[in-house]
Amino acid sequence: MQYSKVEICGVNTSKLIVLDDKSKRELLIKCKEGDFEARDKLIYGNLRLVLSVIQKFTNRNENPDDLFQVGCLGLIKAIDNFNIALDVKFSTYAVPMIIGEIRRYLRDNNSIRISRSMRDLAYHALSVREELTRANENEPTAQQIAEKLGESKENVVRALEAIVAPISLYEPVFTDSGDSIYVIDQLSDVNSGDEAWLENIALREAMKVLNDRERSIIIKRFFENKTQMDIASEIGISQAQVSRIEKGALEKMRREF
Image (cartoon, rainbow, N blue to C red; front, side, top):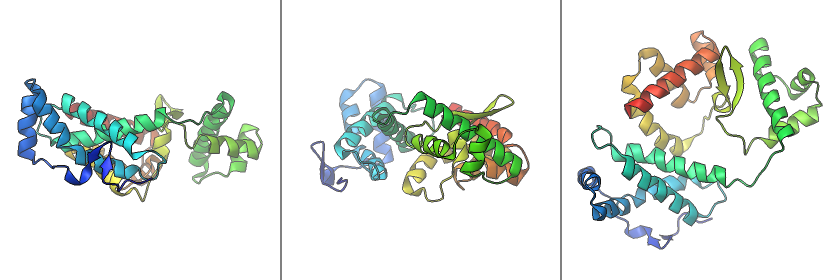
């Protein structure tokens, strides 16, 4: 797959313009007044932003033309929904929108399907893994999980491997006192690269509304790439409490935007 080719979807990427912040704001104001010509200029002037985002998906076996088109949809949504009254750069708002649109496309076009019984076994295995980890303070083996479930080790391993690609990171896998723990809460990434940097732009802009504890947890989760379990152990509270504080902090940040 060639992301470095000059022409994508009939657009010569070597000739794309880059608008400065002042020009973007002027065009955004005109867009809100119903100026379709200004909207077209704003779209074309931000195609390089879309191109930079799809570069982060080079590990996917996807046609770059398709990803570029989907990214453009995200850009258009960002233009149509951007609130010019807020003191936020347009790119800060647009990048997560573009990434989100591409991720929805990749998720909805995933051809892998998992049987319900195998998915249920995988969920139970994840829940047991969390339970054993909390009880023993270390990661259980597949054999230990299998024994707890009364299943064979082979079935447990097969089920967990089957859900790696299609399962949503926001599927609940464990609940403690009404607080759900999601798959994404169990993950950390020490080599996230430029994609994480792009996503973190929006987080940095909104962190002013958080108190010290919320800010500390958000920094550890999204900038230091620690799991909720790591943070819980470090600051001396339960993982469920970390999850609750994190979700409250993110909600504050969403309202701020």
